[in-house]
Amino acid sequence: MKKKNSTAQRKKVKFDNKYLGDPKIKRIYLTFKKQLYSQIKNQKFCIGVSGGPDSLALAFLGKIFSKEFNSKFIALIIDHNLRKQSAIEARKVKKILTKHKIRTKILTWKGKIPKSNIQFNARNIRYFLLKKECNKLNVKNLVLAHHESDLIENFFIRLFRGSGLKGLSSLNIKRYPEDNVLNLIRPLINTKKNELIYISKKVFKFYLTDPSNFKEKFLRTRIRNYLDKFKLDGLDINKVKLTLSNLQSANESINFYKEKSIKNYARYLQSNECFVSYDLFNYESEEVIFRAISDIISKVSGKYYSPRGKNVKNLITGIQSKKFNKATLGGCIVEKTHNILIFRKEFGA
Image (cartoon, rainbow, N blue to C red; front, top):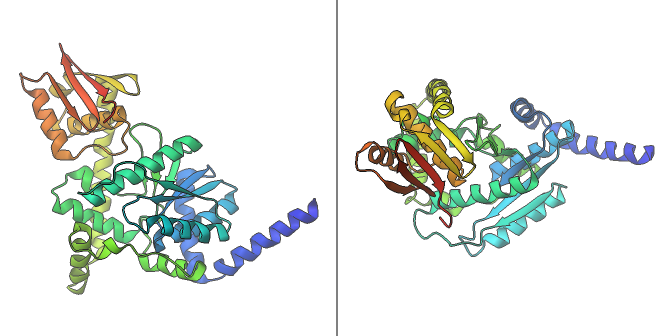
């Protein structure tokens, strides 16, 4: 028995030394380890894998981390079914990860295929499938491969769309869920994309390229191209990150008061039904009201993301009018009765 354990240990050391002997990879891993351990310690976790260089690098780093801290993890590959070759690509990625002894599962979308607003709907499909599988596995932490470029691009996308403080500062290391079910962890948020490409080439000698990354019809692609031009004109990414850090600090302060207001004015009878006192609208600021209603809709509907901000604001305007009786938004039915609002899950939505 001791001999078997010794052999397993030698294999582990050989695997680690092969790649962590590379100073660049070791430096990236040490930063990743510090970020991830501060969030989950040695709890089990899932990672989302697309097959791109970012998520493949994450799969490698996740494996090393799981070995070091004896924490179980599984790589979840999403097949959105948006392209004919998506199933083939998913199986190819699974084969490569399995070859490196990374436990992997493909999650395939079998519902209606979106024909419009594709990137937004694909994201919703992705998080629906990931959340469902994590719940099934009783995993509280979903680790994602968002990196520095995603952080900067997301900020400018939200800026172009006129987002408020919450939207502008939405992408950070950890996102706490409104429904207390699943944490989103982004330990690579300050890691450069070219470093992740380096890992994927070195370890897997393979990665997929999403053709949508080059289509100008998508806002993210246009933002990416703008940023490349801005960098040539002297855009300082570190100053953008400093702005983001300041915004996130302010956002956390407002969230404190949002949580306090929900505790004071909302009562959940069950996960898909909530009573809210009209006093919320009389005694809280506009931003706190907006966030509280957004979170309640997300929790009651069971959807990871809240509806678009402008739709929530329109609902709040309607609620505050004397004529309001009933409305639906984001998978919720909202009804007025006396001095109480009732939020119920809209089944089938």
